Image 1: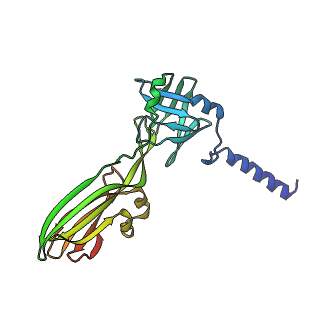
Image 2: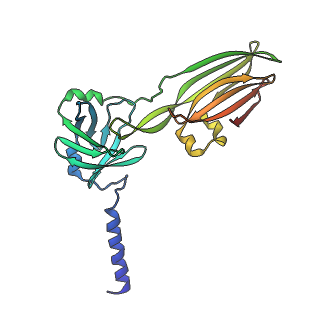
Image 3: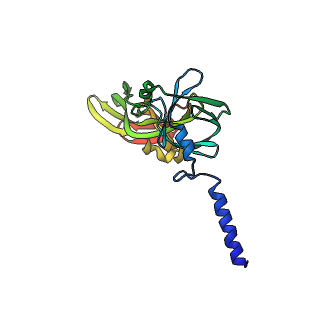
Length: 262
């Protein structure tokens, strides 16, 4: 065989080897028999609590905050594709038994259920964790320019942010949150001095781009005033996390705005 033929053969071997190494999320290699075996409702072995519902290419969870995910089975692993792609090693799969290892290294045992009364646990519209949450504050402060009334109204928008967390079975699930908008109105003796809707995007110059995409405007609150300005904290961070960026917003009594990181 000439050199060109040997190179072609080596390329074919490498191509076939790569094809069998890792499944593609858009067009994954999968085991159709294993997928068919997983179809149906599965409950936790310890108490019969609904755990997952495998239907077609999707897995649903009994939690209206957790989004359904695409799944496939390849060799000895269960793959779940949501915000991220995760794989879980299968230790046992039979007609009525499914065992896999979660991200904590613990074996999860699920049993198939024929109880159709459990279906409503999975048939829901996914709602954001903070749907319809609002906050309001009304503050009156005194400066050398007189009394100023500050009104802040925070409400959710239609902009969605997905945060991944782990459920009771140690499986990563995606929870949806809605971003917030903070409407601020400042008045002096009944005359409107300043009004604006604050969104997280206008603080983009101060905040890491990657974190910004995962964050929401969590708070916007009055902190203090001096003779010339009113001060507010815009708190931007990952939903339900302990850390966040805090941006100080300074608004003068004639409506000029500056920002700085605190």
